[in-house]
Length: 261
Image 1 (cartoon, rainbow, N blue to C red):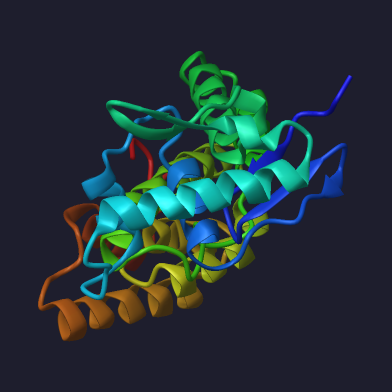
Image 2 (spheres, rainbow, N blue to C red):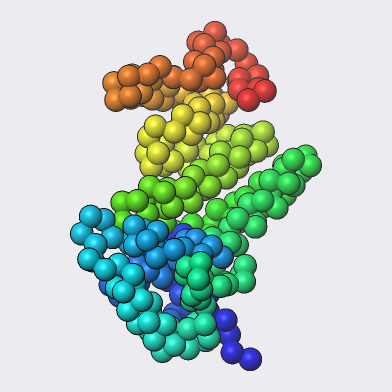
């Protein structure tokens, strides 16, 4: 039986079949493939597709140009083998990608993350945390770096990356509840560098440091984010972060800090 092609967009665009890399087209065909994969099972009208591929320098006749690129994309996928050519569909409603869930890392991530959240909601922190970590391990970097228009980056790629952030928030909360404060510190420092204005990561970092007995470092981390927010954004830290700061200043037991968050 011919192996199905598997596509990865949670990072640079990649494809493989039977664990062997598949050659993918370059240029606008590659961008077109990435944009379609980032909108699985959703038909995109030609005008919408064009806006996600080109900025203000698009072609005079985007419909005709898109048709040409789609034809070339199908030809390139046909050369890949593994039945890849059949995944690109066209209809009166637009163009779409037809895949089963295990053919796209985004769909696998969503399924694993949702299953893990249900396990956490049921009270099994160990299994739920392990499930979220497995889901998050599918991410290799930003969604399709370098591909798509500015609108694609803001309307599609950033929306997908918000799903990662929500999963990370839930994972950090569960790991802290399990007492894995020390193990989280390095990961949270990395996340605050990657997302310097996402307060929840800073709150988790401050809490992890404090519960690890590193009170001075926890206060330093709070001052860093508070200064960053006031200087760059003209806003104060959230009430939750402020309350955590005051808890640390009062010297409350580290186990009590951050409860009911």
